[in-house]
Length: 505
Image 1 (tube, one colour):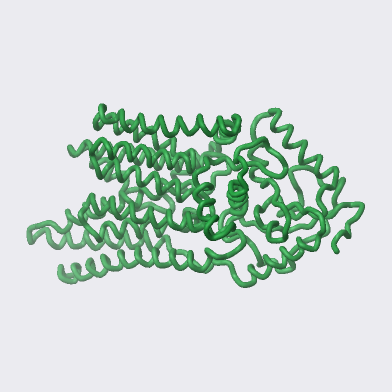
Image 2 (cartoon, rainbow, N blue to C red):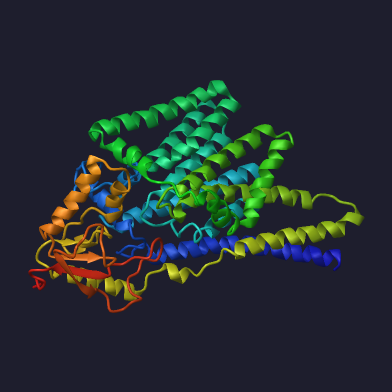
């Protein structure tokens, strides 16, 4: 093949690569627009997040002694308070929480663009970085826009990294400390990122590092003390003590690197490693140390999340976001080398390498393509959801829907503590709190406190058979009303009290 033909092929592949990245952004925006107003859960724990916000709007404390009516989720509170402020303006429901996540995802795109653009002075590389992160939407659980705190946590972490890298003044280091503290107040996983950030600050300028460290200590330490004081010690219990009791999935020590990293992202993994090695060994030591430590923090946070029992694909978000940044920066560097001046003898070989590089990158992004239709609930799902609400309304007394939060409020019923929150307390070692939670569930079942129980499975964390009868499946359509991401879930079985199984109007 002539060099001119190879140049044309390289140019075509270069445009194809960027077009793929832009296409992933467009697909993501389309998915958001088509599902953000869906009134039921896209992921099985979304409703429980709304219950947290509702509690804030009712003026009640978030971290309290567990009851069957409410048990807080094991997150720091910022996402819920931000969502509550928006819910005050547009009304309680899933949409305000999803809007916060969506805005945070767009903010993350902008930070990735800004950092890559600043590093490379190249718009193409910056757009490629954004497109790469958008392409990771599916492999990270389709989580960017759902009612969960992860994207706000990632946004603040990325912003802290951007400020620390982009600016070099005493004020910027304070701002970076504020941003990573806000990330912690959204999700405590940010503590894993704080450590390498602090190490970089000490390496770069130990005197100025005092500003970053002092800011983090004051904001994280101070907020922890205040919130713990306000909540009579329950904040520390839910945010730190309970997660410490959960077991580690040892298989994921290796599983993470092979299945979560190498398998879906072989090119990005190679680029990340090679870029970091090159920066650490070619004399650009400060830049190399910065990106090595930030990679350790962001990928380390992802690894930690996946090791944790119950850790889903959303745990990968910080690691994937940072790899998208490094891909954009490294791609520009490789392009610069391949487009440099070469002798006539070398031109043909370089042109072949250039085509191969673009081809491999196109294959990497194309390999992340997914069917967006699978992430959008259907009219059948919507109809089934309202039929479920109608069924709940038919019972005069209280109903129990432990696997899905907020939905009972559509039927004028009170939501109860989510089974995930209950399970979080039961997974740890034997404690008085664990016994208390287990006993209160058993007591409610023994007393037949609920006129109907809607469960995802035909069994529960306690035995129902002494007090309730499984009357069969709720939905006749097996395809309807399943969550579209996370654990596949929907209410499946209806249990009624044994003495009076016909209690509907």
